[in-house]
Image 1 (cartoon, rainbow, N blue to C red):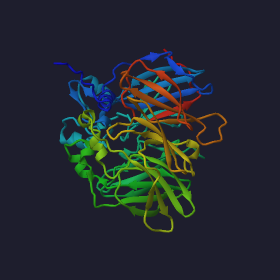
Image 2: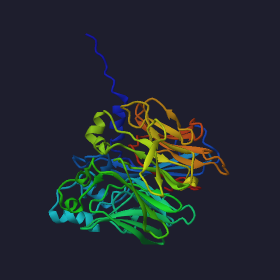
Image 3: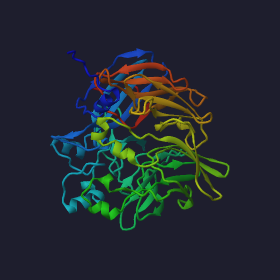
Image 4: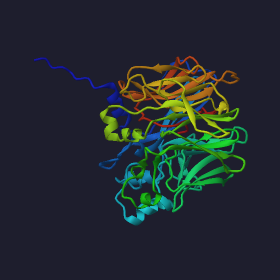
Length: 477
């Protein structure tokens, strides 16, 4: 009888490796580069994402429960350095003690009724596991998530420096936007209570609430749209009863319920007054990410990555994710919201999947032509391609390589560039076959590889990042 070696399914293997803890923290002055880095590229790619999925002998439940780790790729004169470091948070300290110390997205410690309520309203009981995004706010770098405890860090050493100031609400979005003219940070936070509300606030030195909208059962809110005159909330049917959330023994997200009979609400706030200018309704959708928004004639145009329902959240529980099988993926949609009144109509921008979208920031709040994001080439794959969406032509081209799973692509414009896509994309790619990751550099227009810089270990699936121009100096030891 012949012995046949059973080869693991590449997609399943990548999912296991991409959700396997990385404990090593390194500071490497230089890592190997294949190909040629653009001579003009000078800066640092900062990236955030979960990297530890255990607390002692106990595993967390969900990809979004992993402990935040920062990664830094310094790029200058064709050379690349790399360093990584966990955020030193209360959640990290509890994990080092072998326990899940705070209520996370889908994991919750055994707590008294008082502590369950306090975890929503008392800062000392809130998680500070800021694993989602990175924003530069008031010349400080802040790691953010959907808790009010953002974490400030040094962008050169990745040292944790403390907590950011508390926003005017309990559940801020992890995606603040920045006015292209004034540079002001704009964000929303859900304020929980007997009468809950969405609070629109601006930071320009200090936080200032400029508008609010009451909602007895707030929707799950991860991002929002911004135009020159309006801020747009898209409120889907995934809703929560705040007092039930406060008193529940279930993890945070398991208290939300999908109400398939409820429309999606589109709400436009006037940026000047903070008042609700108009509301529209549309069919039920779920979303994490907006792509862009702008004003066109008498319409607000809102482009986003739309799911038909919220089953993606279930798909990302670690047990299901590691076992393989389908992971729901969104289609890029364009909604037109008529300022003269009427329903929210939409069209699909392309017959392709797109998530973790990025654009040339110069076109934020303006008509644009190109977006980039992760996609896939197979139904069972988990983000195995990078996609370039031509918004005007409604076409998509992709970069992919067998066994490789790229993360969010970040666009960096070539100095002096005029064309919207004249620049490069940076993406951290997990090479499942090699068991390690690399920084990929693509021509953003042609989606052709220019270079890659190889890391000596795997980097778990990450979420969002930020490119810091002109800071490609190598890490200080």
